[in-house]
Image 1: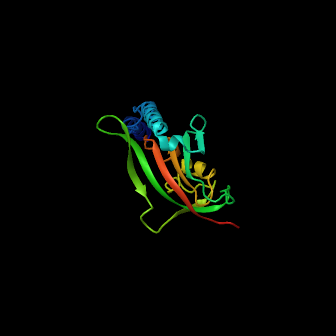
Image 2 (image 1 turned 90 degrees about the vertical axis):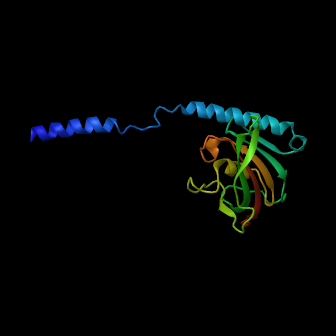
Image 3 (image 1 turned 45 degrees about the vertical axis):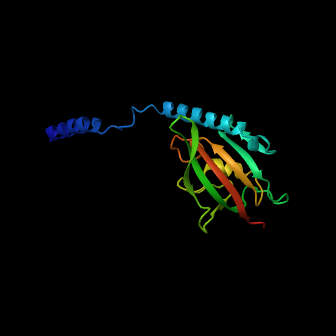
Length: 178
């Protein structure tokens, strides 16, 4: 009986070490640094664009929360989005990637602009992590109004954690006004 216990212990020790996480040697800090650099380059490029430079309302939370929002259309002046309000919105999500010349470019990830479905949720109460609603989008929606449109640039950690910056074009199309 003692030999069986010893043999089981040796078996577990030998084979458990071969089941180590294959990703434990990956240097995620390198991915994070590269994503931050790409995001910075893209934001610098956006700020040079006269359209965005002339926008009045910019919410800049880059240093504290990792996102930046440009309000393209203000929307309804009396219907500001508040935490706890049910909203629906249209979106286009893009990854920021590099082109053949090493310049940051947008690559469309997915959109609901072409279908009848809207993304709906309660502001400030994010659904599961596989939702259409990213944390960075929720953050930006807090600063919007009904029928408002925003262009949001966010860190990967506020989106889908794929180590690419994410850009969202969002438009609030419905809000529960009760």
